[in-house]
Image (cartoon, rainbow, N blue to C red; front, side):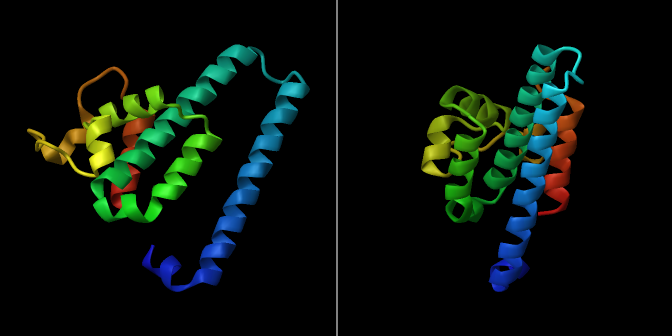
Length: 143
């Protein structure tokens, strides 16, 4: 992150590459649906929605672990929510998965310390599948 902050041209290039990759993937998905290559479009849509929510929770978890990220990347997080249709209810669910409340998020800090801060992201809930856990672990490793 520091390198990207110091090198604006590199940051713009990376953003451009990532944007084009996303567009390519979305076009591919649209083509698969149009070509009837997907057996159950409703199930496929549900799986994509779940993946999107898991990804958002992992991003949110990373931001919450680094208070300065909230100030630096708040606009990007808001844009992500708009683009991926993360409404207030799903945002609150993602916060809950991370051990935060919407009020704490607005304040930018936890009101009370968690009992076990080290693994607050990994509460034993059915909502945490292996993909979400892996994304959260990767976020920790690449911070």
